[in-house]
Image (cartoon, helix red, strand yellow):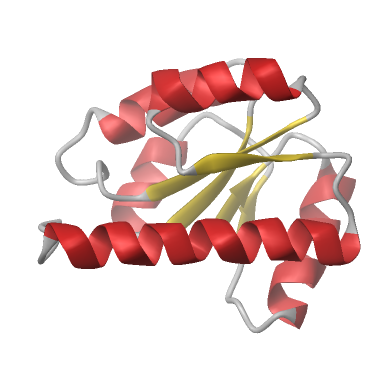
Length: 131
């Protein structure tokens, strides 16, 4: 898992939640260079903040989905935007789904697990993934 957010506190909380649930979590506080990190590290899932300086999450998602080497990475949007705005962004970016920044503890992990399972099913249905 790779978590990208410009808020160091959010990154630390996310890392603790994910690692506490048994996931290996890498974190990045800067949006610039993210596509290269994804190419090099090849995480299965990228949890992506939408509102970041320099390069917003929607643009990063478009870059990832537009590259042959990163198009199969599962993207989970993480934002404080409204459910309607997030739904539109999911459609536009091809993200797996979104988790509101207001979701805490068990609710966050339940939603996260559901999206990871969705990604696993999609990968299994599409056959081998080329990187």
